[in-house]
Image: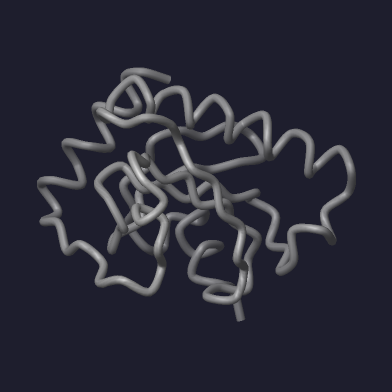
Length: 130
């Protein structure tokens, strides 16, 4: 069965996409830690990030860098934090999170619940800076 992220890649499930190329997709987390929290994935469904080939891992991180620069240009923050946890969805993904303190990356705290309109506006703003 395809992962939820593969279903997003295949456009079976809607997402607030901020960037895409032939091999990668970046979209907003629907329950973000902070506004602008973005997920970056390879379109190829691979569960564990270190099962990617060296080339796939490199291009994923270079794509994530472009997305991070777009987030940084959009969201007032000190920097973009990066996390790879990989247990929630069996599809490699990188969390890019605008941060001003370490607590901004505390995954155990309650998540935000923005409206679809707020997510759409944020996605559009980030996409315009990529």
